[in-house]
Amino acid sequence: MAGKLLMGKKELERFGAMERVKAGEMTLVEAAVKLGVSYRQAKRVYKRYSEKGAAGLPHGNQGRASNNRIDAAKREGALAAYREKYGDFGPTFAAEKLLENEGIAVSAETLRRWLMAEGLWRRRRKSNPHRSRRERRECFGELVQYDGSHHKWFEGRGPSCCLMNMVDDATGTTLSMLFEQETTEAAMTLLSRWIAKYGIPQALYGDRKNSFVISREPSVEEQLAGVQPRSHFQKACAKLGIEVLVAHSPQAKGRVERSHGVYQDRFMKELRLAGISGMAEANRFLEETYLPAVNAKFARPPACPQDGHAPVLGADLREIMCFEDTRVLSRDFVVSFERRLFQVLPGNRPKPRPGDKITVRVRLDKSLDLYFRDEKLSVREIDKDQRKEAA
Image 1 (cartoon, rainbow, N blue to C red):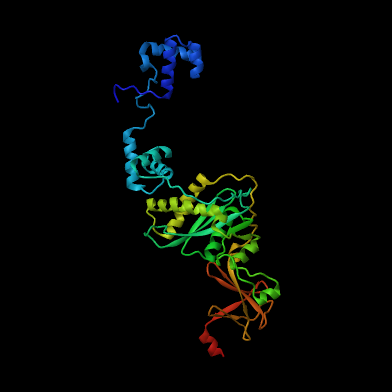
Image 2 (image 1 turned 90 degrees about the vertical axis):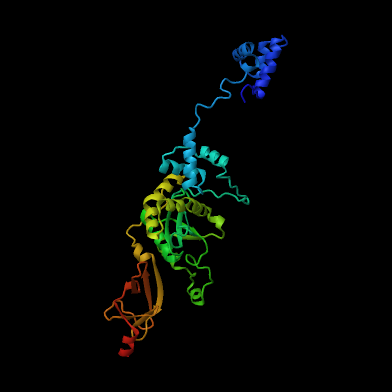
């Protein structure tokens, strides 16, 4: 308020000391020690006090606007853009988009203060139980966490879908893709993309979903053979030398769970700003725009510079990432698989006999082949009517 002198604790202490110096009760040297300033500073303070009295003690800029203050028009422009486009964005993400899309440069902390003053945003604090923090793995590719996130990614503009996500434990590098459902086929497709981009990881860490692992007890036949039941995904990983680890709680695979939170905050809003409402277009946006940006922003260097991935070395992922089932060859050299009939042709070497076990391999592109002792068989598909006529 004009005409009113505002004095803080420091000014009041200086006022009392200067009064005692003026009255002869204290020397200027003693006043400097009491105030914790140098003798030269005490002389300057006493000079201002002698000339202006108590008014000379506060700082000369008191009551003036800061030279670093942000223009009011800029503040109003930022707040108006936030209300119009970014109403559910956090201050950090909103500050990035204001600079990227609106050309308004403002720090996240300044924007946070403005939003809180206007009642547009408030801190969200979560009270979580204490858990011991697990240290990151040292090498990139030593352990990769994977999981699916079911969410309204298009906010009602498009179909419901699931985001399959892989996150490296050492660096936080993420690779993701949208699918209709969280299936074994989706997991194999995403893992194939990771291997093509980075190499074969040493281990994967996921939860106990039947799409990825089998938790049932072994059958009698499996017990006699001394093998544990494995899912198609586990079988494919075993061929590549990838260990599949099972998490027993969401907190155990916390890196991928926290990565889901980033996607549900940033990726969903990026889709809204880009006007994307289809899965194919969203996956192109993921690969070309979002993933390079989010990895550049959040990924960190590993503790050990050595890459933990193994090279592919000519492995045919198309033949590895597939579904394999076993069928028994009938007396008329026919294999039945999912209501389809396949006639094994003569001339195959080695030649299967009735009662032999035939491996049926279905690839991700839905192509199908039959194998006997790891050799591809020449077959011809027949329908049931043709088989009845031949009989």
